[in-house]
Image (cartoon, rainbow, N blue to C red; front, side, top):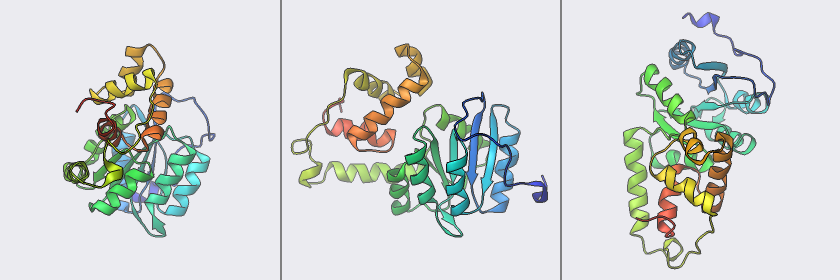
Length: 241
């Protein structure tokens, strides 16, 4: 695809429209080559639609106010600021939006700041466009795609926290949160690897209801991802280790 035909807006949509059987994707990325490769891959995928592409932090923040988004892909190193600001805004204004980082930054600081801001996935730019499309679908279905190197960093951090002697991190000194029976049920399904759609079927409720339960669980556990939720629930004795 020629770079010249790429437009900033691919499809106009009211901010809160619910009419779409496609996964609505927005890309915040300033690398034109990576942009073009991902655009081609998404447009060739029948169950996705690319709503808009932004090349700056400012444009990304504007899109959050204008479009209802299912999956937001964000680069962290943008020309006018950090993509973490876009992640934070999307998480606050559209809690149902699934956010995935796609970046060259693999250090712990960027990783943890992104997860704390609301990202549920973190991929380094060594993934092929077709693999990225697969991970978009996985994220939308309730997964948390993370590059192996990043996953190892997170596990190492949690392992260090687990053996830390810091009092506020110990289960014996930190007050456990009170999850409802339904929230505990959802959390147990998450721990077993079920997606939001699968949990909805198992509990005979809508996917939207499951997403609401997940947001409540995150809020009560003070976490921003499934990995953190499972770790914290086990740390508080809400799940078996």
